[in-house]
Image 1 (cartoon, rainbow, N blue to C red):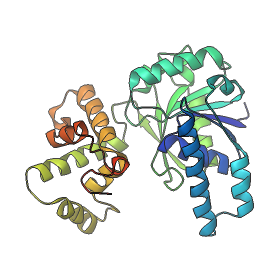
Image 2: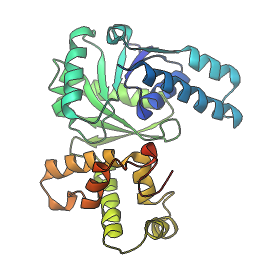
Image 3: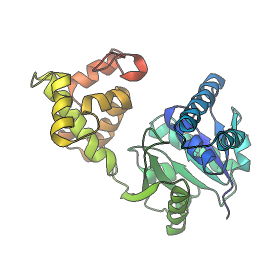
Image 4: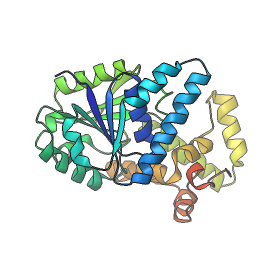
Length: 282
């Protein structure tokens, strides 16, 4: 099946980035969210992002305008019946994703593939909420989506090779590099990244160093582009906690236990950049 129209569900940071890269790559995009203000913010964010590419001579003004013309926003999920491929980027909760995929399964053509942008939740569990588990897979983009080259592809227990091949070809069409991961909690990226961030938070809580010192060691000593605490603020501390809970629950190993300081900060609403305060003030 030729994929011409892509449905993206969820107009948050990840959803609008995913919608942008598909629109830039020549696909018609239907960006869906239940909240109209989210869609308005998403379009403004995409316009701003494309504008920066034009300013840096990485995109022509004509291509920017063409990309925006290929983007349609809507609160009506039934508009997705026109889509040839679905990417879900809603809240990182297994129940919410499963419920969404069940409802999509009832309205979408049987050949349409469902991809979840989940960063840690089992694709097998999500796929089991549908009658097409062979056409459900993980397509985990990195943030910020327009800039990061990786797409982590996750094969569920019943995902077909044909579905994985289609997702891999789509990733390449977006200018991304697809890398396959097994369906284990956290996949590859977050199974390695989140314990590092968690350990950095433990080091801060125990007074091993200040936030600036911990980040400075990892930047200057390990050549990381940003320190783990700065990265945690960028990701969102609530997201970090949710992923660590998935790892801890999925493996039952105490090495994944979220740091108490992280739990306290999330409970206090100190979520990082999006709340204006995390390990740093924004």
